[in-house]
Image (cartoon, rainbow, N blue to C red):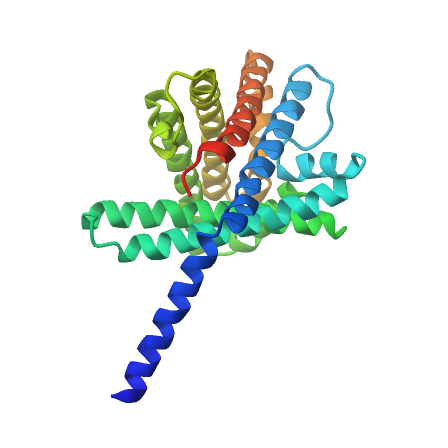
Length: 281
């Protein structure tokens, strides 16, 4: 009994220490920097998409293209290290939020499960961006579209693998439609604490609505390409965000659509920067 009690007390002490760290103002300030870095990446992807829409860019309109642009700028390598570390802190904060949210007894079970799933999903997204940023900072960056195609090709050898690719496409589709819903319904405002009556509130609404919808449409395109790749057993179709935007550009009036999405992604980047100030922590 004493060993079990000691183990339980030790686990509780670790939990308390983790909660103290994630609630410390210094840690939270670093984690908020992760939102800023995410905003920079989204704004750069949007800018690349805008140049692509007007026929003036050969860069990848995805994370790798955006991070290459950051790395090429003066002091960009330092920014990548700082941004990668900030996003890693944001990942830890989301993981702690998911853990303590799962243990909260004040929430209904369904709400608690949804909160944990959503928070873990955010942690995964920021973890991928943190790792990619740190790889570019260390000089080991690569084309994310080629990586996606290569990984997809490894799954195409079996029916189960093709189903897995289609399943990924469906998940991305759902996430894309969820972004559109969040933007159109303005539900994202529930995740922020913005002082009412201030001009910044209006800026957050405008950038959030247009940004979420634009990002959602782009993600729907990615999901469709994954589904197409899985059903057609063609891994070259699953090239991620860059491939989705280039495919949109080839559609009738595609340049207009791409320009609108690019502008929306720039606005989503601005929203992410504003979110760094008003997201509750």
